[in-house]
Length: 376
Image (tube, rainbow, N blue to C red; front, side):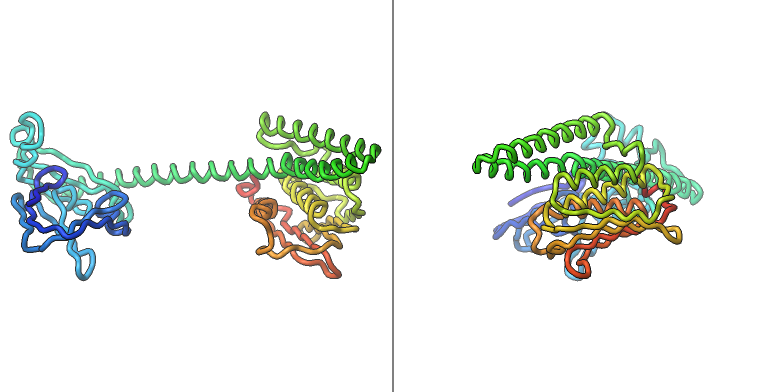
């Protein structure tokens, strides 16, 4: 025979065998009912089960058409039913407590649920030295206190959720800055190292020295960007603005690749905020990096235009075209995801697709006026 009791000991039971099986159930209903990662059940004949004490403390809940769950106590009842409950028999509490508090200093207990919009978030207990009158106004006051405490608990949970969301957003922003600065430079170093190895193997000294100088400059740039990230959290934008930053990137692109790049500036009077300029520049920079690494292109075009309160940035090439998503190796789409996140911060949209006549077309479109809460 097995004997057992609930957590407080108010409910006790006996169970005769034989026990044919033991089961761990991980369903959501059992996890909620037991407040743990799983519930453990044993299989035995129902005729051998007996409650041995405190029948007035039992509460039942029909959780399914074929299942009735029984649990203990005033507090369990309040949580399950979201209503205030009195416990006028505190003898079991006296048996499991220390001293003479229950039965002398405390004669009744009232459990009040902490609710918010119909959800029970917890409960609080009131201990009475004498039998109080259950006046409706008093019970309404206790219920209102429970609702205020429930509101406070819900606000604390929301604050925790907001802090977590802010942390995730900051991590994503940091990952974007690292990718668009250090990671791109290291990818260029990787490509140059292959060419350097081939030049050394072919005993082409002039080419080897040129590639070695490229690697040295790239590593120096990566080191500078990394120090800026560590000290300022993000790589600063060119102080002379977006147009100057784009011209500098075009020159570097021409030096590092064999791709001819044409820049068509159709918005000479364009004025953007520093945050907008930074987002646009990094999207263009990532697009040019993708052309250099993946497109096998001979020609590329960059166009900047402004009309009807919107800005359009178009980057095209005559390479192999965008690969299918299924054909991309694991992790290779990270830069594209960051580009889309930057477009979202601008309040705009980024479209990537095939170019008419062959190659890839990247189109960024966003409004000049953007919600400041999104442009982080």
